[in-house]
Structures are given as structure tokens and as C-alpha cells.
Amino acid sequence: MNLWFSEDQTPNMRIGLRIEEILHRERSPYQEITVYETAEFGRLLTLDDIIMTTERDEFVYHEMLAHPALVAHPEPRQVLVVGGGDGGTVREVLKHPTVERVVLAELDERVVEVSKLYLPSLAQAFDDPRVEFRFGDGALYVAEHPNEFDVILVDSPDPVGPAAVLFSEAFYRTCRAALRPGGIITVQSESPWFNREQLWATRRYFREIFPLSRLHWAPVPTYPGGFWTFTSGSLGPDPKEPREEAALQIHGRYYSLEIHRAAFVLPPFVKELA
Ligand code: SPD
Image (tube, rainbow, N blue to C red; front, side, top):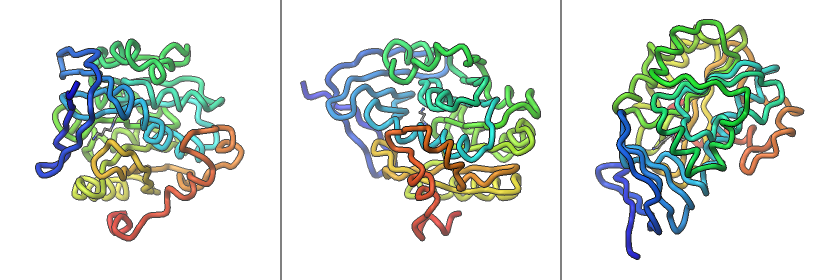
């Protein structure tokens, strides 16, 4: 079969993955949700034809979104994940033994249900009794829960459509209010190759809103440019300083104590945005 999925990652560049089978396609009230079996990256989840995650490279993204904040925080108990309906980020959060409760604030319940059926290695996390689901507007949920979370992780799609609000200064201010003293937020902040203005804006907002902010990165081959960034804001601990004991307990496939430290070392073309 010569069937290909392709995503226009910019107006001038596209990524193509050979498809073995279309496992699922539906239009939810919010978006088109598709799961493919690909020849190179295992199962692929797309939303409105944009790659969200693949079985083969998801661990890099989810480990590097979740662990730096959770390892830097001295005792993360209450955690909020905004977006992240596939379950990969929640799976990583639950590796931390201090975590008592993880709230998943996801717009689209169908993403969770489809992931449970087709991406069990990610969505298995949803069976854990510490997970609470809040379906609907994630930004509204954050605004209604001040002073509640030790760590907030924003696992959003790209800043288009309903997800655009998750990249706004107003949203980050409500996130600051939703953090408990000493809390840390990490957001996925897109590609330094193709989303430079967006990344620059995120960095500026974080510097204005949080006493301390940092940028780190990880290689995610199916995302535009393959070089992905994460921005953190902290009311206390420095996200780039891992607690060694906590880091050594994680046993990631990408994340490690050494990778935690290395991820905050930026090449000059990224540093000029940081
Ligand atoms: N260009 C795609 C960026 C998507 C980032 N978030 C993906 C969510 C996976 N849990």
C-alpha cells in the first residue's frame, strides 16, 4: 500500500509518514481525531491533521515536559495537566511517588476515549485512582482554582484555534495564581526554527510573570524542526537544578539526571530567544 500521511509543518515544508492502516477517524465537537498505524513511528495520533504524538518518539516529549519541574520541586503533591488527552504526560507525572492527585483539564473527552482504545501505552495512566478528569475549557478551569497546584504542565497543541488561549499572557497569569507557594509551571513552547516569534513572546511573558524562568529543549523527530522547546516559570526552585535523588528514581528512556542538566544548555541561536 502506498498511502502517506503528510502535514504541512510550514507553508514551505512538509513531513510525510507511510501509513499501513487508518485505525480510527472521527469528528468530535471540537476537531477531527485520527489514529494511523505508520510504518516508521508506530501509531500516530493527529488532531485536525497535525501530529500530536507517535508511539515511537512520544517518550522524549512527555518525559521532558513533565520531569524537570517535578524533579526540581521539593515535594510535588498536587499536579495539573492542561491538555494532554493522550495520557503520556499523566503517565510521567505518576512516576513521582509524592504525587497525590493529578487533574487532567482536557477540552475534548473524545481524545481521551480514542487514546484509551488505540494508544494504551500512554493512556494506561488514566486507570490510576489519583487521576481526576475535568473536560472543557482548560483556561477557565485554571482561573477557577487559585492556589491549588504545586506543578502545572501545559501539554497543548499548536497555538491555533481553541488552543491559542493557552499561549496568552492572561492565561499564564492565571496559572501563576493557580500555583501554590514554590510552585512551578512548564509549557510546551514550540520550535525555535519555525515558531520564533511565539517562543520569544512566551519567554517575555514568563520573565514578566514569574520570579524565575527557564528554557530547555529536547529532540522530537516528528515535530517541526525536530528540536522542541519547553518554558518553565517558578515561584521557588530553579527548574534547571534537579534534586538528584528524585531524578535517579525516574528511569526514563530519554530523561536522566545528566539529560536534565544538559537540556538547559542552549545553542546560541536558541539562547538569543531565552
Ligand atoms: N506540532 C505539534 C505540537 C504538539 C505538542 N503537543 C502534543 C501533545 C502530546 N501529548
